[in-house]
Image (cartoon, rainbow, N blue to C red; front, side, top):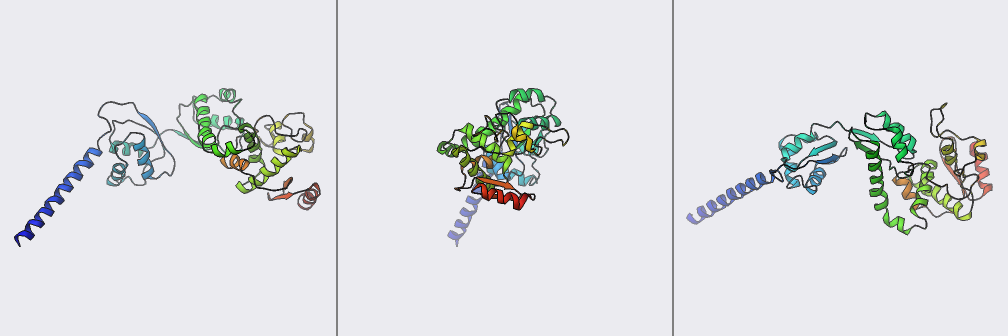
Length: 326
């Protein structure tokens, strides 16, 4: 009996020690990474990102001692579901509690969505309409003359003080991360160089809808390039025409007369690829261009409902024109 009581006492004592040790460890982990004044780091939380992912990223950035502690703090403070998306200035001398409280307050940064297939003039015009007082539209257009095709479409969080140069750098850096690095193996295995891929992807983005359709259209256009046929892509005529004031549209419906426009971008007159991209393609269009389907088709058209129809020969294509467009 005495031995049994001693065992119980020992187990109870060990339990208390474990609790005390856990409390001390948790207290230590709740401390700032450093007690000295440190320069803040800009930390961005995308919309819908899970608390566990935020905690891991804070730890990787050297802003908290352990990701689990941040999750515990969120639960203890009742902050679950209350963390805001945005950009935050966080310093390693802040506690996890201070960081969590900061993230519930939101930011004054601006969310900007750049859709796939926009040309740089559209991007510049859209940015000028946001509350970005330091942004200069003309400066952005000047800086991005050589950047068409690499101004990566995405949803961005820009600081209100962002300049044209800052935004250009962010767009190009995103392209570098998601395309140059993210699709490095596919690019290395391609028969074309990255410049040719981007030109083609910029056309595919404007000519097709959805990843599988993009793969099919890319295959047709690559087939035409290989055979020395003109691409005959209406999107290139739209690019030549530019902004149409009457319809308030950067991509107006081309006319039959536009097929005679004197421009290196006119793919009805000039075989092969245009000299540069005509838009800024998204990830799917670039990947589809790198990974086209295997087909002998050489023609495609969209009917009035937007459905696409393919043809292997000119006869098949003309039959599709009669069936779906006349």
